[in-house]
Length: 237
Image (cartoon, rainbow, N blue to C red; front, side, top):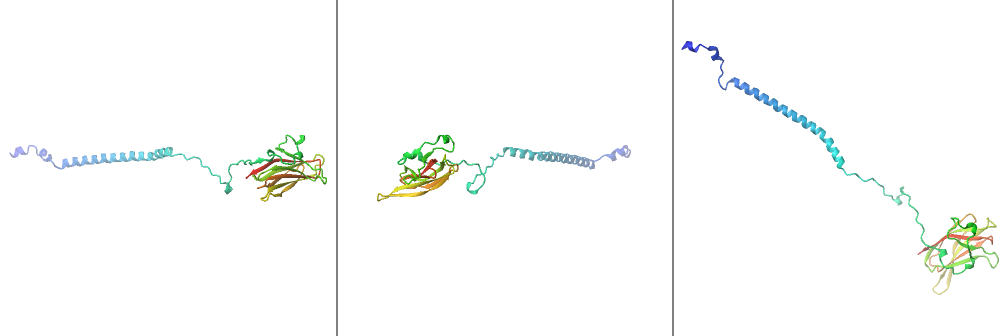
């Protein structure tokens, strides 16, 4: 029996029992490989995830910018009272009634046509042309009267004397109003006037509120002259 047991002494000594140290080494190696694979997968995922997230914000910002509403161009409201510069505003045309459209109540004989030399000139629009007095004791001034009936508050006109024989002569134009009182008397009031000479027109503005009639009176240094009133406007109440 001893000879039989000693036939393969080395082979018998090299065998490992099931569940011995060799199997443990293989398990350890397998676990190590698995760990390496897991670590590699995790690293790859982190890499690609980082790369994706790195590129993603730019795309997100681009999309947000394209979806962001575009603001309308900013415009500044013009505050006229504040003195800020703004668009030029066209001046409004004065409203009212021109005196030459009213009936002439008195002094119609003192009205003449505009001289031919002045016709067609832009400055002589809607002219009322009154002859100068002869400067005698019986003819010191000329007057033309119009009805107002208390409907107007102001009169504005431009006085343009015309003296063909003496360009240095001076003319004076005044406005007189008549207002009927409760006792049927008439109150005549000189509302003021302006002096002017040829080539130097002067604007005349007077208050005519509550007046029933208006009289334009002219006085001249030269009896051969004319007084031209242009764009004579009555402002209604």
